Image (cartoon, rainbow, N blue to C red; front, side, top):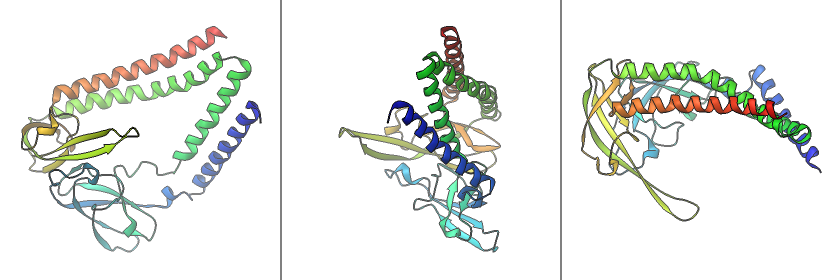
Length: 286
C-alpha cells in the first residue's frame, strides 16, 4: 500500500471512530452521559503520614447521596478512586461520578461539568482525520499547505484561549491579595521514587501544608512547586495567601505566583504569534 492509500485508510478509520462517537453522544449513550454525577461532602480530613507517597492524595472521609434511591454513602479515598484529592477541608464539596446503579464504583472528579457529553475521543479522532488531510495536501500541493493547515487551527485556538486565560490570571492575583495572609505550617513531606527506562532513579518530594483561614476553615493541601528546598521543609512555618471564596486557590509565594501568571500569558502570546507566522509563511510560499 502506497502513501496515499495509508493516508486514505488513516482518514477512513479515524473518521469512522469520530462518527460513531458523535452518534453515541447524540443518542445519549456514552458512559460519560449515562454516569450519575453528585456532589459529596468531606466529613473528615486526616493528615498524610510524613514520608508516604503523594500518589495517595490527602486521606479524607466523604459522604454523598444516591439520587435514585436516596441512600447515603460514606466512603474514603484509600484506594484508587479517580482524581487525587490534593486540597481538603471539612465541609468542602467534591464531585463524585459512578455508573448508574453502582454507587460503590464511585470516582472522585474535580469538575462535574467536564466531559459530560463524552466527546473527548471523537474530537481527538476528528483531529487525526484533519491531520491526515493536511498531510495529503502537503504531499500533493506542496509543503506550504502544511504550514497553513496547522497554523490556522493553532492561531484560532490561541485567539480563543488568550483573553479568558488573561482574565483568569488577573482574577486569581486579585483574589489572593484581597485578604491579609495567614500563618501555615508544613505538616509532612511526601516522598516518591521512580526509575526511568535507563535505570536512573528520581526522588521527588511534595510538602503538605496546613493553614487556617480568617473564616476559621482549616485547609490541608499539597504545595509542590512554591517552597524552596522542599526536601528539608518538614515543620517549616510559612505565610499563605488564599482566595476567600475558594481556599483551594492559595500560594505561599505571591511573587512566584505573579511571575507564573506573567509567564503563562507570555507563552500564550508567543504561541499565537507562531501560529500566525506559520500561516503567513505558508501563504507567501505558495
